[in-house]
Length: 238
Image (cartoon, rainbow, N blue to C red; front, top):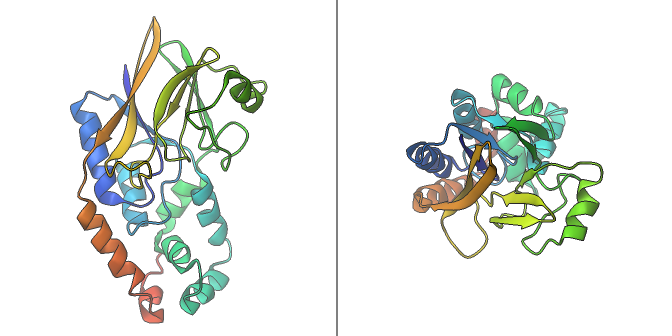
């Protein structure tokens, strides 16, 4: 059983398309997303719709959580978005989500416990301590134990740091997916983890893939330079 674990798409549609196609070619049976689906990129609604279409399993990340919180006060959100103040891009992103996309994103759990081929897997965004906590490649067995608390998964899948790695730490296989749409480790390619589960246990490796960076950059630059009240009003959906 091959599973593609992805995280930190950050509203980058070309990167997500490329990641999904790469995972399909490698024989991934399903896709599990460890949060931060929206935020920072130019395609928030499109990314959510694609994951819905692909029936991806997902949890919310810290950026997703804040996006949904903004939508609880739509009038205030629209007013602040029109002002073009700091955070205007995040407010714009929230306003692009239609009702179906909002409901899907709001319904995502904060973590997920899976049984894959008899292996207990815990999927979180940051760490079991919270969606803004980090699991870095340098994590020690003691450090991981303090984050896991009562949890004893055989595999823990996370993201948030955008630093991809696979390591066995204190008897637990730690899989940090890195980032599909916003890599920060000096490699311009996106990343995800391809894991395989069978009766013997689990194994995983990090996959790096190319995507049309210029297309994403062009859309983002156009978006950043085009914050006008009229455009923002046209962006309100649902």
